[in-house]
Image (spheres, rainbow, N blue to C red):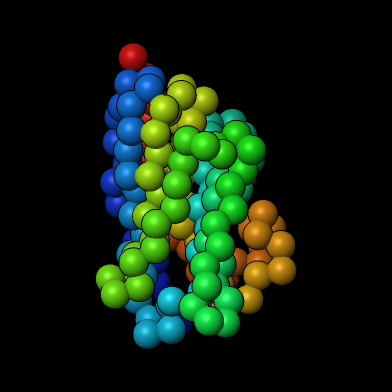
Length: 127
């Protein structure tokens, strides 16, 4: 079992930055694919970014086109956390952001493949 807790959301003006964190329980979390999704009001939840593990302790990050170049994933296995650094934020980034994880993910953007989810954290980008 893995439990996920997000933190770091808040209100920021356009162009600003926020750093979200996903803290996980579980000794083998370092091998889990961890993804970030978001859901804006009136819209479906969508993929934002994910980091995968492979043999040799290699991690690879993937990003949605809408956040590529603005968002960056960081993984700290010693602290069992995955962070999402969000820069150059836009009003359209406003959403509830969720952290999700699972040991084996075939399609990173497929939400149904993630068994473990956090409760979400609100990000509001507004002047």
